[in-house]
Length: 309
Ligand SMILES: [Mn+2]
Image 1 (cartoon, protein in one colour):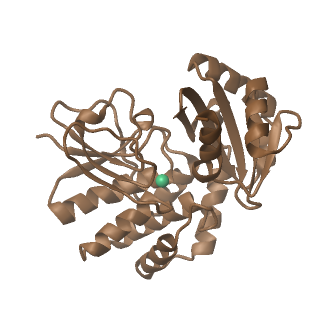
Image 2 (cartoon, protein in one colour):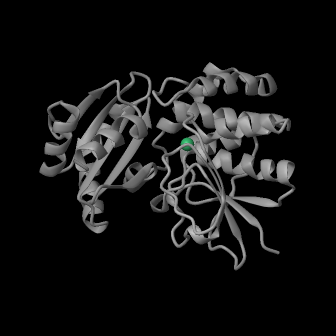
């Protein structure tokens, strides 16, 4: 029997994992569709912490899809972020909060809203169908919202996120401040994290006009622990830039407590571009970006604007 495989993006973050798990329950209750959550890569330390805390097992790794398997994409719709080897021909559903880049040959069920997380969108979908959310799913969705919006502080945060978080916590009864800080502590942990993990765990390639640009992010409460490895990280970035034939590669270390970022500029091209776009001078190959924590809202749009001029 073919199944509906619910899957988030490569280099999965918390939102993409928890929304796959919860969407599977949504498909069952709303449409009586048997679905299975899968993961498109290794889980990060934050997601591991969350699943352990709520005693939820991690989705199986995606592997290869079966002959007739259909796919529901959560938390992405860009082919660059899809599981390697998959394409749009199998996609029947998209639930997302990123800009639309999807192309489909046939009509599909597609819902994209400018909210802070896919978890927020899913909670809205349960509410619209008057389906109650289980306590475990409520906890998972809360984790997805807190992770993507950095506990409602990121500029990507919307009123829907605030409202939905409050509604979900009537079911989950979590101490939100305490839980968020535990999550962020787990996220900042470099335990078991290799150098290549640091640059690839939250990394995406973007097409900006005719330019191919890679941007990695590391969200942390302790930027110093990452900066200590700056030289090695720069080396690994240069290597990745060549290996993936990128024109530019950037890496941002986002301090989620102080709400700022350090943007690593590997080469001269990156430095010239970033100094122009962000209006700040690089010092020792790092550009300090006060108030910047969101790649999606504060880094990608100005870079894209400049590169598509
Ligand atoms: Mn997300």
